[in-house]
Amino acid sequence: MVLCVMVLIALPAVGEKPTVLVKLSVDELKQALAADRDKPDADVAQELLNMELTERLSTVELMRLKATLPGSKAQEALVALADLSGLLDPPAAEIPGDAMPDGTAAHKMLAQVVNYVNTTLLQLPNLIAVRDTIGYEDRPAQDIQQATALVSLSYMPLHVTGTSSVTVTYRDRKEVIDEGGAKVKKRGPAVQGLETRGVFGPILNVVLANALKGKITWGHWEKGPGGMEAVFRYAVPKEKSDDKVQFCCVSGGVDGQTGSQTDWQVFSELAAYHGEIAFDPVTGTILRITLDAEMPPGDLVSTAGIFVEYGPVEIGGKTYTCPLKSVSILKAHTEEPPVGLHMTSIYKGQPKTFLNDSAFGPYRRFGSETRILTDDSVVPNQPSGPAPADAPYAAPSRAPTH
Image (cartoon, helix red, strand yellow):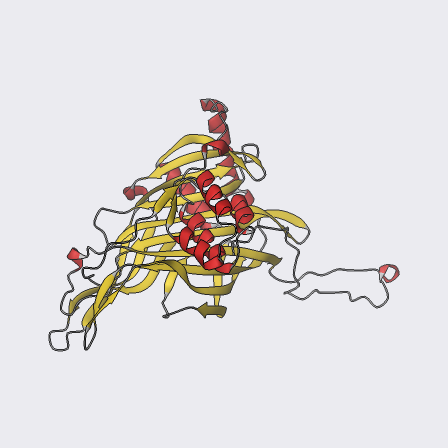
């Protein structure tokens, strides 16, 4: 399981102070959007970009609010705002006051979760899905020394920098992404972007294995779209972690003759992390998982997190629980350097935020199927025999994130 971003980074210069964001609850966000109902799309988008939620905005609530917005700019801004809240606790109204389970009941539920990961996931068929991703970035205020002048760039809040659509194959319990057939659209300067791997089986296997070696505690009950959900909290120390945060690339020096950056290196940090596992308390089916890395103070990467939401998907006439949505967030110091400054030990600028919002589907089985019919059962003018490998299978309706 790897969360990484590919961007050249170097020492920041002094720039203007970042915009102060307005913090508000989910209810306050709803009130603000209701008051903005008659405003133009661009104005609503700008207001949303200057907000920060103090509670998690659920995907169901996101889709409801998104439908009330005046246009695509406000919708993109709302998605980014909701995604950034994904590692927070939900509003108090979504946490029932039911009594926590006793030790025996909690242990039984944990055993069901372990059994789900070790057994049920192994029964997933070989499958193919499309992963549609929207990439967001912000731009910290910075000064860039160019050939003829010092150029000052003002702060720019999170905005869409590109979209991509790739095919993800899950075969023999391994995840493979077909980058060759990717459809990618960029807005503004081309960047390598944030990359997340292991959303299908690997993230669940790794997190649960690490958590069992770390600490797992009861969290709370939670109201989910399909009913009551149970939530465990976990914490994994660095010495028992398999979570590696990688960031490309860090300059190791400057060429004395040309003044150009040299010796670019990949930043790689094995990190402690914590998060939550939301699951069906009856079956142990995992419905949502979060991972929040604990980066050392002063590191080039200050934040690295991911959450994945799962739901029912029909594949070949059977229903399976598969990823519906994933969000990856990474913050790192990435400003361009003044000429001659390169020491990685003094990166102190405002961090740059990278955010990927991905939706999965439609799902279909990988391979082909064969139907054997007797002469009496053949329907005239209807094909029989192998179906094409790319024959689509219907997926239930889901809440797209964009």
